[in-house]
Image 1: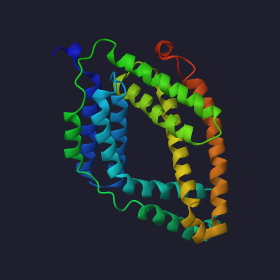
Image 2: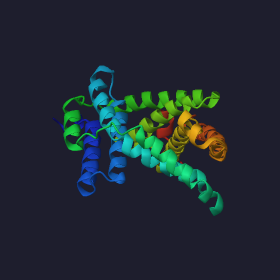
Image 3: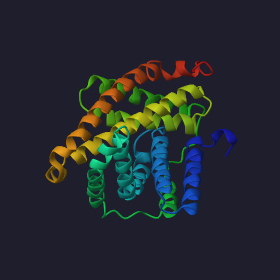
Image 4: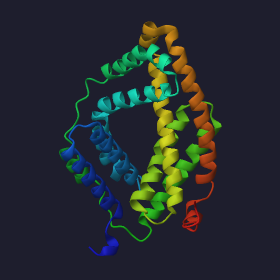
Length: 274
């Protein structure tokens, strides 16, 4: 196979897997390793979106989701705790102490809901995933055409989210913003100015935090939480609502900057984005 026909998407996937397995070898089961694994699965699912058609990517995508889900209990409990701490970060010490039992209890409620998940062995899981990974000889525009599709999808979902008064459209947009980001940084390095990628990364992180706030809000509003804590939950809900409102404003601005110029024109902007 010539150098020109090497599939750059498979190469990026293999590199991402190698990095996370090295992390697991050094810190097996640590929060950092689990986070790295779940990020890796998201990157690989993003790379799959660049391939043409749906059938060739179905098996690999399904197995990646299974691998990520098998670690969701450990990671979700950790993220929930971090989000709770963030919501309380601006509160006076006296107020924080007053509600400390609430934060401890809410964390335990989330953990109880995920105790039946059993993490898969990562090396064996990734080896199996790569056996069903698409085998495609890449032509000159192979990845570029796929990235165009991902960009358009992210662009449209962003427009839908901004027009909506609901939270769910933002969650759908978040997934495709990640696909677009990982596609650019993993497959199309050097095609877009670094400043653009940094802004896109900040948008992805903001949408991720928005999702974490929504999960926390759902846990707080659950029947079990209301029974245990009642009115003590109101300060948390008020803080969450305020932050979600501010985030939605920032998402609207980010969409205007990042998704109002098509991908082909954006390539010409390389070096000019700050």
